[in-house]
Image (tube, rainbow, N blue to C red):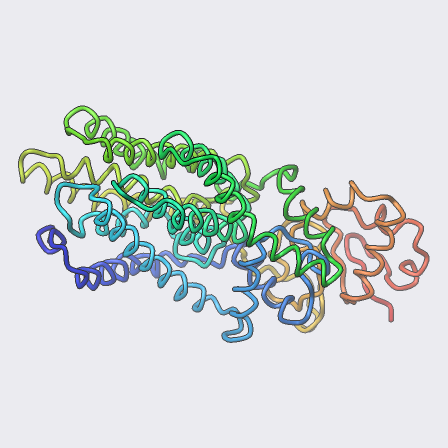
Length: 465
């Protein structure tokens, strides 16, 4: 099988597609439920398609460009889970192909072939949620475009100006998809300055191009009278809101420890055993820093889960491919590659199979809980973090990210908070409010109209009109 991918022929991607489809078969037997992030993205697309302006009428920290994708997906497919899987599959194939072509273009290896594409397809099996339409996955494609222009500057006689411009622009687009990708701005600036050696004028050009996509978003929200909400919810509170751990750090270490260890060995072997020219040394340095910066994005995550680390895959593949290709004996290369082919999918299948049968997985899965015995068309607002209660009821909640909403309300003037809460309730008109976090009383305090509009029964508040 390895000989099939050791040829520089784009038709090898047919084999990659077949392998990716083959790897997905075991997940159909595990019966993985809809996850809470997926449910949130579906509701976000639904609310946006219904005319609610993100960050103003819907309080959530999902990137503006990601919201546009969920909006269009809702209009075209009803935001079905199948459409999430299909679009994500296309994005994965595109990223695998682009990354492999990039490594060929910069002469990263002694032989130009599709072995890195094979390694990348295998590494994507570390977690089932890499195959969902997440903001991290959508933004990662544009981040790799920026990385491609950065790596192209390691070659001799490369024209820096177009690459610097596009490097900044694609990096800015990625940030508009996924907030934690902000960590790559200092990466682009510092590596461009100290490793590539761009001038100060080119550095300013990079920064200007990076800010262009965000500037377009700001202009749009200025015209829609929502600029302050957009800045507050997406650009400022992203640093303050504590993350929710759908998967704890111990399991993250279990999932990523083997590829990280192999990448470390690959980096050491590549540095000690392989005679690198100046260009390859720069590439090695860039990919190492790129890997470390990816790990640093952990501190900006709103939801901690494996899919958030999808950008770890390209630098891991870069070093692991070096490790698997530097073996002097053909039997050694084949043994290591086949071992990797077996172990990585087993890690992916094993952790989700074990976790899906434990209560800890309830913080990640949307279990389709029943909240009432009333008609499924009622609008339900849940003042709490768990989104399960939406899965069988109508949608009547502007507060999709409750942690963000609570932080946002806490920093508001009390009178402004009352006005905001009252206006949100009047517009959403939920038939049922489930006060899980017991915040309704404090938010509705001093608003007599709400006392007449809703009647409390324990945690439930039912509409009287």
